[in-house]
Length: 231
Image (spheres, rainbow, N blue to C red):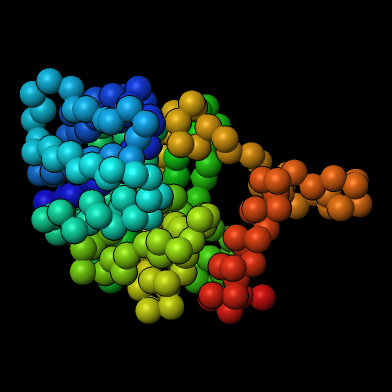
């Protein structure tokens, strides 16, 4: 069984499409755990009768996505876990293809796929530990073997997914890539503030102004590099 864990913070509207995509899955053996991370308007589950077990866990205050994901994992009972942001819409065969790939490759600790952000395709790469040290090419929404999951670092404000994959890689755990897009990130959701990576590497100081988001991005990047001793 798969445990699908969805942290939500003020994204009730996009959550509906995420749940609808789970209803359409060709793979049926899964449970869904929604963690309301202290939304200003508490998340409620639609009255719709879902064809899968669904549980809602609520925080009284916002604790951040890593804490919400870890809390969801505490309630999970599946052999595999996948963390979906509320703005994720899965292709109908997503879970089936992911679990099938892990079953076919017992040496892999997790499986990941390419995806769309809106209409932009984000292709990934075959697993390479050295490449992973230079860039994160694996989305959070990957299917992980339960006994391989080390937990998210709740002290990190950014790059929690990259930190997760680096931590697993340092333990000798590897991933398997499905070379096709298996889900889409809705615009207007968690990733709606996404900026092209190239903008974070513009020599802003020379231009006399550095956006706050860029400053926070670089500070978080330095913390991650120090933690994992990256050059």
